[in-house]
Amino acid sequence: MKPESLMMSYGYKPELSEGAIKCPIFQTSTFVFKSAEEGKAFFEVAYGHRQKNEGEELGLIYSRINNPDLEILENRLTLWEGAEDCAVFESGMSAITTVLLEFLKPGDLLLISNPLYGGSDHFIKKILPKFDINIAEFRVGQAKEEVIKIIESSGCADKLALIYIETPANPTNDLIDISCSKEIAKQFSTNDREVYLAVDNTYMGPIWQHPLKHGADLVLYSATKYIGGHSDVIAGACLGSSDLIKRVKGLRTFLGNMASPNTGWLLLRSLETLKARMDIQASNAVKVAEFLSKHPLVEKVYYPGNLTESDGEQYNIKIRQCITNGGMISFDVKGSESEAFKFLNALKLIKLAVSLGSTESLAEHPATMTHSDVDAQLRKELHITEKMIRLSIGVENYEDIIWDINQALDSIGN
Ligand SMILES: *Cc1c(COP(=O)(O)O)cnc(C)c1O
Image (tube, rainbow, N blue to C red; front, side):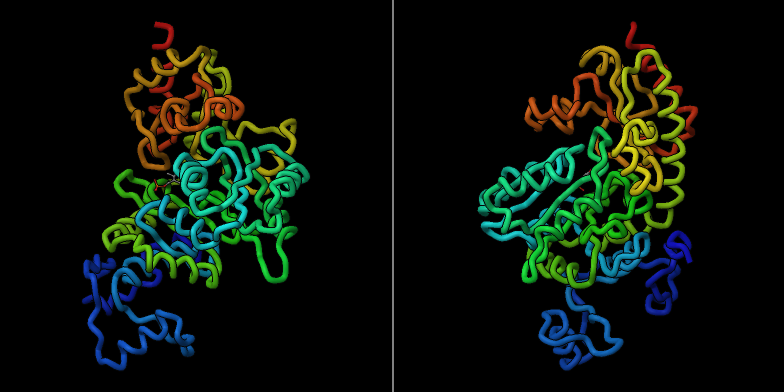
């Protein structure tokens, strides 16, 4: 069956919870063992002192290690993209930073794409160097040969350990080729050292893009965004092979940044409507982008749906990688910061807030908000201009969203 048909039931046995149709919140720190022998057996598996026996599940021990709300959530999340395993976290940043810390060690080289989410960018450029990790960067649009040159000229190409990319890039919707990034990772891998590829797939969510199918080793999510989808919870997730997720969960146990039972329960509820919500968001976005593209006060629209064959490689990547055009649209108004601010201040239905992927439509000003920490020169080169607005399209009636945008654009002239 399709994942959306399984989101209400997969991995949950009502008979283990008094017949409750929904998984209760297992608000408990620890679990009672039936016997000392059972406790011993659970710990042997949890700490990797022996392999699981045929059909043996990891027993419930302590909520920093495992909890039913988290386990069921992790199992359901794997279904959308056919991942072997998943680890959930109390924020997207904790998922991302745990992966970076697990797969990098002092002296290693990390290759990143640009632009990255502000929090990831800060952790990579300001905190990882304290651990003696070297960073090399490439930009959207750079060809494979150029990226290889960047790695080779870093002086530590033989220490490349991880490639970390984000596509579509926030807020410009520029695309990065996942399979090409994997080819680069393979080229720098040796028999005793595999270079892994991690992809932050938050912008497309688990429905619209499946990085594992294009060669990614790890997929990361801010589950705060589309997966949570209601602007009421902060959470994160990482998916990949059993072997790699075992490492991620190992570090998570000792950092203690797993999701809480309550967060797990909220996300289980969100997953039931994930497909329905995202379908509406994607189809609303098509209508909004169409409207913006024709409006005389709009200078440029940044939306994968506007790519045509004349855009060359960007168009080809979109056709290969993206299942829809997504629900995020950025656009430049004619003018500058003051025109952009007039627009934002005039919105009535759409809320002026950062974050994305939620049921309600949101608008923000990347240059002075989400991306204000990006170096000014780099910001300019990445086309994150003073006149750019970023929209996250929600599930409202699209005619109302367009009505609101239209009246806010009208107000620029006043
Ligand atoms: C929001 C976001 C994050 C960080 O997630 P949190 O849940 O806020 O910690 C990481 N990457 C992207 C692309 C995001 O949009």
